[in-house]
Length: 459
Ligand code: NAI
Image 1 (spheres, protein in one colour):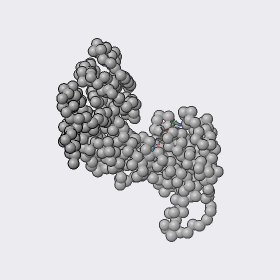
Image 2 (spheres, rainbow, N blue to C red; image 1 turned 120 degrees about the horizontal axis):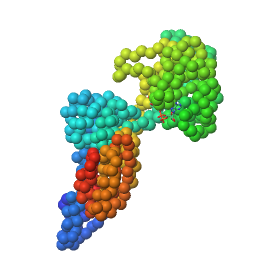
Image 3 (cartoon, protein in one colour; image 1 turned 60 degrees about the vertical axis):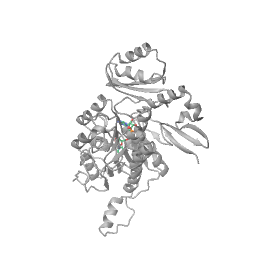
């Protein structure tokens, strides 16, 4: 029987009287007679050199995931050999974080754990923060940026979930189901067709034709809606949708208006009393975007007066901090109004997608330095590292840093195989692919460049 004896990353392989050394490193798939290797001093020194240049072991990278992040994240990390993953179902307070953050390389949170400046200052090993949710409000982005810590989130993983609820509410409200449902629960048999309509052939007006708006467009058209939209950007139509050049045009013709805009100064109370009055008589308003976009009191008046026949609202100007807290709205008990507690994007599928999306971004960052989707370190999409050592250099965005880096490389007469750069207002991110012989030397040099925040080398 052959048997294997590990010799560092090489394995000694014995078969009958013959002995071989075999390497399982991807780039060194070879099988050599032991004698040949043992008698070759050159090979011995290259083996030694290889050992010295191994990247930080993945199993030593400590990943802390809080707030019951979907298990798909852990599975993804494990599949990529990041096995040192600690998970907790609850949010942590600042005190708990301060106590435990010291040896953490990557932290994953949802919306309730606040990563403050104090936490960031204590997190000496932290390389990245994964927000396994839509926003990044819970992170002090300024502090993270100054510390060169990469922050990711997952803004589009729940697009489909929101779009499906828009379609469902459109049908429910066109059939006046909220009222009939309530009556049936009260034992009242309201069997008639009064004010009940199919959605087929009706005009769906979408405001904001981004990720969610365009997905609503596709689903609505498949149901038979005549889809129209308005966006401040020149967005191309999906399917047979029609672009309207003004918001007023869209409001006047639509049987249902659905809002899918971000919260900006421009969208703040964009649906005020005046705009609601411009909506078609008997039409319906849906807001599953942001609470600041609709004047809720004006909407209540428009419904009570019969100008609008219904509304579906998922987001509010003021929302309770957490589940189970009391909630009040001027729309409560209004006729043909569906109120939901900001759950447009809350589905198991969305949680799964968020887990996969954010963990993939974190893995790519640690594996090859890619920062696409980052809110702090400038976003760089890096190619696969080939036959080179990769040096990642994050620095304050001050004049002269890049020329200093290039001057030093030129003084060292270093062959740079690839150089990538991106800056934002605060910091710069330079990535250098360097001939393997010089990686460590260049890293030392880069560490001493003025305004350096942090560096890392990938072997
Ligand atoms: P997105 O960024 O992909 O699309 C937004 C679109 O709105 C862009 O095309 C933009 O050009 C357009 N826009 C911006 N200002 C406008 C204006 N004044 N008038 C017309 N169009 C304007 O965003 P996405 O992913 O489609 O999300 C849309 C909204 O939905 C966001 O506010 C987001 O926070 C919210 N959302 C709500 C969820 C929920 O649970 N209810 C879940 C996910 C997102």
